[in-house]
Length: 170
Image 1: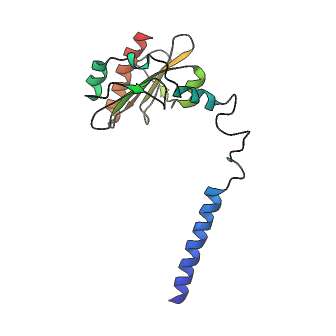
Image 2: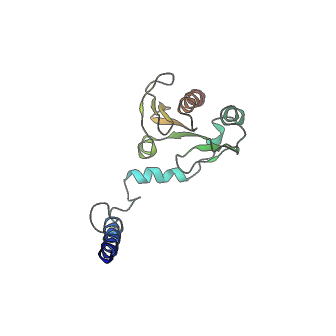
Image 3: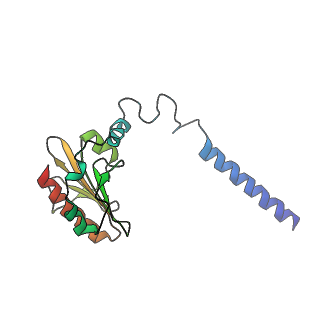
């Protein structure tokens, strides 16, 4: 019995050491040194970092009623620090709709690029897992709708409907 206790302790200590080595090391691939830290000049992180600055009209791209028709009563829209643009969050149920217009660099830095989809703009792609619809708009920009809705068929329908509205406004 004593030998089993010692083997169990050794396994726990070995597992803990393996985790420290695998997760806690600052050396090797994936380490962050001053030269490769996120946000270094010329990286995709620069483009993603620009999304944190509100531009002023993000929440005017969809109306309160248009969003309420999809997710019910909501917060009225706030700057979306994750995808740029605006996010409207339902007052209950956890649903949300994001609407963004991004430069190509910003789009490539943050978008979940899915498969081609019909029922939207030419060149539109939809990512079923994340509920993100993206399509080319304006001169070189990309418009996006993300529908945070639990049911996948409804999520896609909402993204396509909101995408058509957004497409008509930019």
